[in-house]
Amino acid sequence: MTHTSQRRGLDPSRPGEELIVLAITPSAARSREGIREAVNELAAKMLEHGRDHWPKWTIDRLAAIPHGPFPGTLAVAFTDVKRVEGLLNDLKKEWLPRNRREGYPISIVLTGLTDDTDAICEKTGFTEHTYLHSLGFFGRTEELPSEDEMCLITMCGHGLIARNRITNLLGSIRNGELTPEEAAADIAIPCTCGIGNKERARKTFARLSDGG
Image (cartoon, rainbow, N blue to C red; front, side):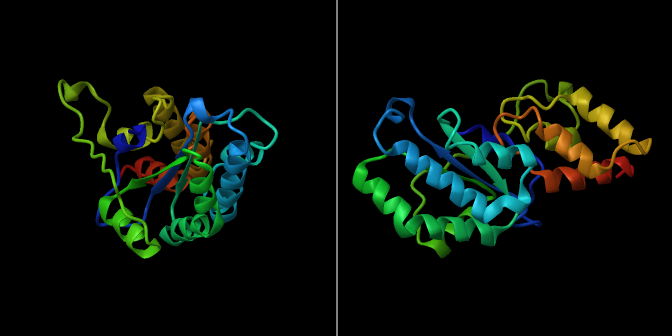
């Protein structure tokens, strides 16, 4: 159902490190009266509950929704379980009941470690109705980038984080030309999904640049 299931680098020993919230509106429903306002409200709630964790361009994209093109998908990465719980609890107050009454088919998808998503749904009173698990990559996997590189490459579900770009950024960090924070912000720029996790990317770049 979603490209976010192919992300690498998460581990049950580090719970809550990354959770992605996607909101998908079918193209056939985007002309319905009132649905744009519902998406605008959702974007505002995402900003309210997670602004501190996203690259600036993601924040700008969410803030521009009332004035720009109607987005079919909103997707943002959280690094705090409590913020995700807060967002879902907020949606339950008025947003979700109103959408159900109006018949707006805005689908909310939560991606993360199964233990994390299960715990969030239990605490917020939601029931999971569908699971999507990735079995990983098969075939000539020796041709793939390293696992460390894949942790960064798969942060973009559309494959817009290039392996050579990561190599160049690591070189710039080791030469003192960039910080890990700046490299993490760089790889988020081409990603149209809006699901780059700048904190996990920063930690990965810092570890790799130190030879870890």
